[in-house]
Every structure is written in C-alpha cells, then in structure tokens.
Image 1 (spheres, rainbow, N blue to C red):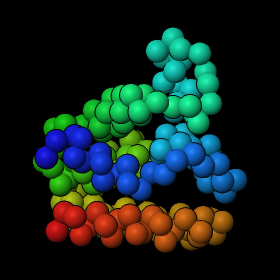
Image 2: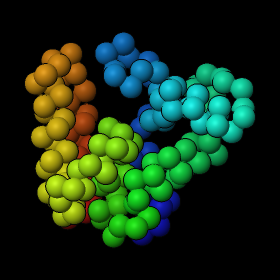
Image 3: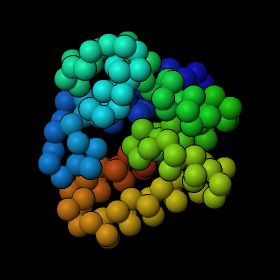
Image 4: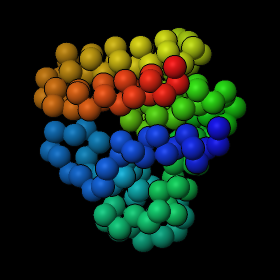
Length: 146
C-alpha cells in the first residue's frame, strides 16, 4: 500500500475548517491544527496565515513529513503503518510512537488507542461529544485492516 492510499483513510475523517471551543486541538483545517500550520509556515520561512488558507500541497507536505516520516510509518508494514499514522494525526506523533512499545499488532494497537480515547473522556467529560466520532474512526480502521 502506498502512502497516498494510507493517508486517504485518515483524510476521510478530517473535515474542513473547525474551531470548537471544546476541541483540545483548537483551530483546525483538514486535521491540521493552527499550531502545527504556524510551525510549518515558520520553518519554511513563510508568513503566518490562517489555517483556513492551507493548500493541498501544504497538507500533503505536513502529513508526509511531520506525521508519516516522523512516526516511522515508512518502516512499518502496511496495516501497522496505517494505524500508527492515523493515531499520530488524531493524538500526536509522540503518543503514537510510544504505543508501538506496547504492541506492533495492528488490532491490539487499536484496542490500546480506544482505551486511551475512553480515558480522555473519563478524565475530561467535556470531550464526550467527540468520543463517538473517535470510536467510529477506530471501528472503520479495524474493518479496513481485518
């Protein structure tokens, strides 16, 4: 499976522009937070601009370099690469890589992720409104890799 095929799964779940006061990611467009986009623009010596204006080229560059390569997905077998990339996008590269120390079995990895997501809500009930979407995403991922 190519990177393009794998990223297409995650992009189905990353909508357009969103700024929900309860979303810990803050202002986001196509899954890219404003903080990530600002860092990307700064590192490329580009002026800061609204994440609403992010281009498809920038989205691809960010996901490929700051998620796919940063999480080492290019070195993983396809199914594991898919689950690690998606978790990286949804919850951060460092967390996704840390979970690889728990298992390299894609289905067990997703189970650990689901426990993590449920724990978020347990510790912060304001996140309950996101749980169904998160779990729908992991269910779709399980179905795809089964």
